[in-house]
Image (cartoon, rainbow, N blue to C red; front, side, top):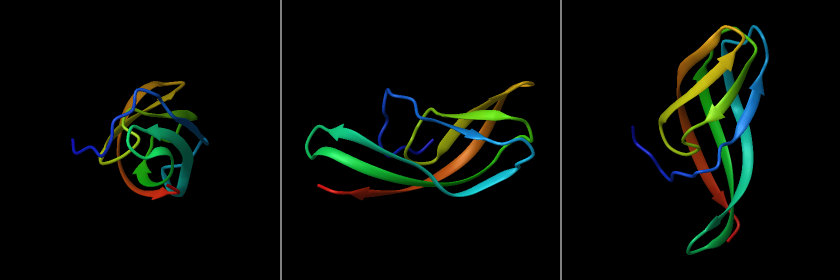
Length: 89
């Protein structure tokens, strides 16, 4: 698993029932970089999910890796790829 940065904080988004693919702007968030201070990250992701109502929980917000989509039928491991852009200082 190739990682950019690893954060202890989890970021979650909800995906609707019936969706098997989600493309585009997934989440924007800001974190305190130890050297650069507050940095806003705009993440884009393309991944496949199981067609159940699920909450996508980021284990690794940046880089290639995986997410766990938890729905009414249990947990599913979902591969994802994130292209990240640093905005601001």
